[in-house]
Image 1: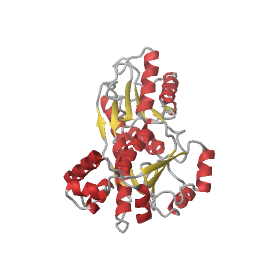
Image 2: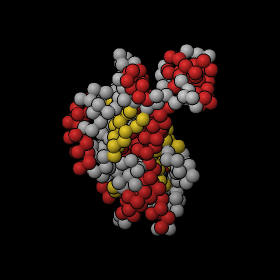
Image 3: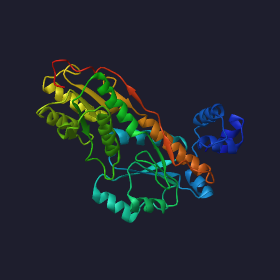
Image 4: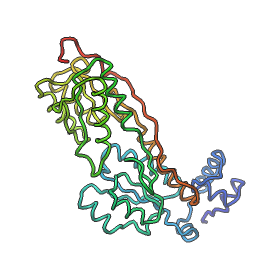
Length: 339
């Protein structure tokens, strides 16, 4: 026999409406009661009827997600965390991978998500025209990249503050030849490399260190790109004694290049990354830790809250905490090395 929501309510000793709120992840149910109802529903084999819920509420119970690079660690981690929150609340995810200019243009021309989603999470930074197209959907919008923008709830970090802490750490250790591996060829309209580069330049100026263009290289936010960039930096007439990489993956590539050139880290070159990738602790990488999964989960929760409380004001920008994590890849420059 098919198990109904009434059966679950009777077994759990609560009302059917409480069961509905608990299994949909909505407000008004304590964690203890929610856990009890979830356990009873699982024991009885109860599955909510999506079609009935959709007819009753007018919702699709689907969240749209657009990403520029679904296969890259940052985006994959954000997406996985957000999907867990959506799934627990009874929502499916409709994913669009807009990795090429052609795919992106086609998406924003056709807007295939219209009337198919209840809310949308954007992991890319739309331009003004694209932002207007997303706002025309008339659904809650959230993002985990870029700064505050009209109509969106943006969950992010202070890129400038994170970069400043990393570069100042190298300056305070005594380094003067500090290079940077950036991701300037990243996704379209990507503002992160710009903010982090400006912070790098500002800290150098603050410390009285003249900027050397030869100490900047593009790593494309990949391990392979970081390796190429580090190799380029080592070919400079006066190579760096320290490197700030705008992502941990590029820092990993830099470490591989240094190892292939038989240079020791941090004895010959110090390296700092950004992200606190899941492998950063394994390789002892000093890095700026940001809650990547936490940003995805928080953006998802805020979208669901807007769906449950349509009259409430949505936050325009939520800033998550960051911190510098000191490990084994940074040390003062050796006295005999170039300064």
